[in-house]
Length: 60
Image (cartoon, rainbow, N blue to C red; front, side, top):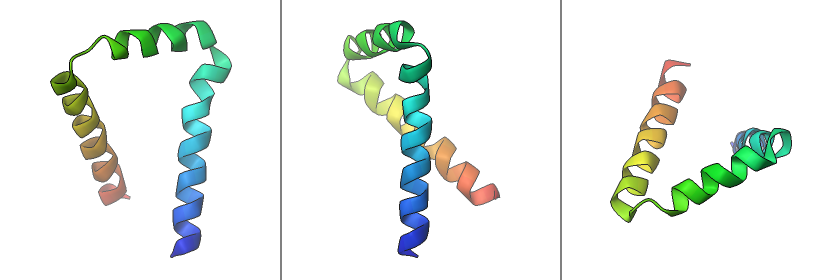
C-alpha cells in the first residue's frame, strides 16, 4: 500500500512539473492570476479538482 502511495505522489510531481518546465512564462502568468483570486474562488477550484480526481480514481 505504501508503494502505491509513493508511486502516485511521484506521478503527481511529474505532472505538476511539466507545465513550468515546458512553458515557464505562461506558468508564471497563471500563478500570478491565481494569486489575485479571492480565497473562496481558490477553495472552489481546489474542491472541483479534488472531486474530478476522486471521480477518475473511482472509474478506474
